[in-house]
Length: 151
Image (cartoon, rainbow, N blue to C red; front, side):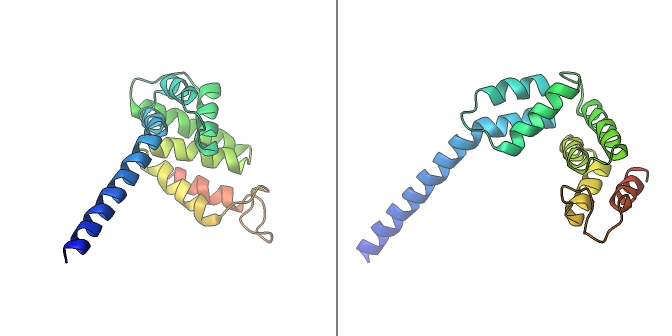
């Protein structure tokens, strides 16, 4: 019994150490995500520069906002509205990838409408041709997303 007790304790300590290591490794990227959620895009770009190997999606989002928008916003709401406006522009241009990225950024700031639209786009599983399925006529996904945004 005593051996099982020590083996269990060793397993617990090992698992705890592994979890702490993972948390510490993810901390820099998590800080970048926090800055994006708060609409502090300049700070997000600065923090991303300190990350050794950032996730591609995170780097693309930071690059998108740092090249297209005012650097920092006073409130999350202002940042969300700016991202939502960019999403609408991308929607008009039929750029599915950009529309989705801007909706995700707006959703991260707390915009529920953008969150619903982004979820709908995930559900449609858009490919790079900006159509949900090969037989789906162009514009169908845009109509659906636009209807969600205009509710």
